[in-house]
Image (cartoon, rainbow, N blue to C red; front, side, top):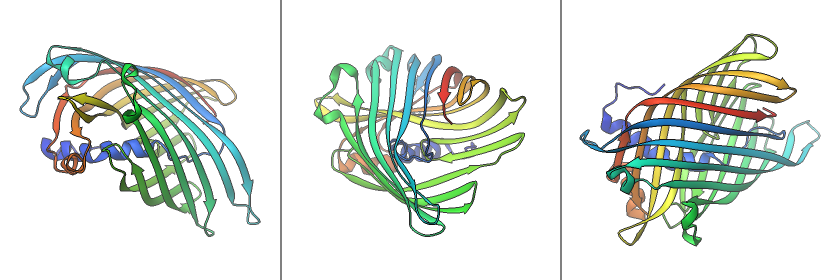
Length: 313
């Protein structure tokens, strides 16, 4: 969990640094089989506050998201190690119903939709390489332009410590701030099995879950930490800027198996932290993201509910 003993400024700064990383992390695959999900979520109306806790309107949020990964080629070398190519499409559509000043700060709707080609191959007995390259639209559906098409890519060198534990480090590429920028990245995948499952993921998102297997068809998960975000290229005061929203959620998730590799689930919990920031699409805007100098606001904590279907995980 995030340490809430940090000052509000330090937490804002940490989330600002993660905003760009989250965009990059969406391109990192870690499963070789066909898999996908579709999910809807809703957070009811809550206040939007500035750094001095002054109210700037309010708003709710409805989202529908989905991702599907298709293996293009999966082979094994003479040592039985995997060499694979895959394609992934990832889409999030957000409807932001805001009031008063919040209506001017936040777009009415945001579409994030990307397509990536990824490759995995062994380097040694323990080391392997993950590489991915793609592009996507990050904009309001009514204002899609060439400027709202953002490139993303990553190269990760991962090390298999145990069968269920992989760590890695590498670099990611994005043009979110106009010019291409390379950022350091980390990779972590750890999962235990049995009646209790612990799953820690720093790949497609930042997520920690603890699951109790109750029957062959039913399990219950506690997800204390689930962080993701959305971005949009916007125009403000005649200039191109990048809008970013980052959320940290905690929830309970019952899940039911309807057939082999097919599951439905429900999530009930809270938006613990929800930040909004607007930065210039420039090197200065990029630097200010690390200093916490960009325009930024926070939504109050609120109830959150979601439901979805997943296949192949």
